[in-house]
Length: 135
Image 1 (cartoon, rainbow, N blue to C red):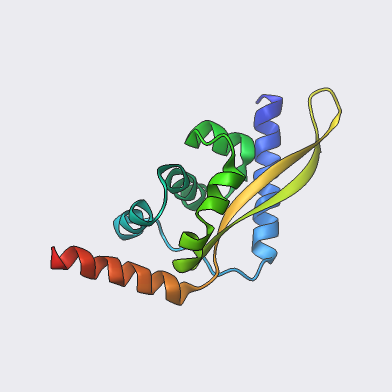
Image 2 (image 1 turned 30 degrees about the vertical axis):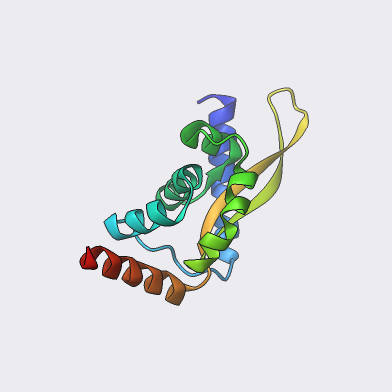
């Protein structure tokens, strides 16, 4: 296991501990309905980020950059903040102090997705189902 992989694993574990301590509601299972809703509501880059966060249960900035091809995650998610809030979701980042391979201090972002209003999410899914059924 490389140093980067070790850091990613440690950060993911820390993010899970932090997430478990939060007051957020459990994420729904990623399925076709959620996929359709996210794809319709969010920009392409934000869609990829949210999909990855839902299926990975949180990750580092480095992993999101690599997997989602989104260079500035903060800009992408903040640009979609209103849309995310409208479906009861929020992206959270916490900076975690680590040491790099040269034993120098670095801050690494740890990202995860929270459902802050399950009613909004359910309503948005149902509205999207109705839109599809009317076509």
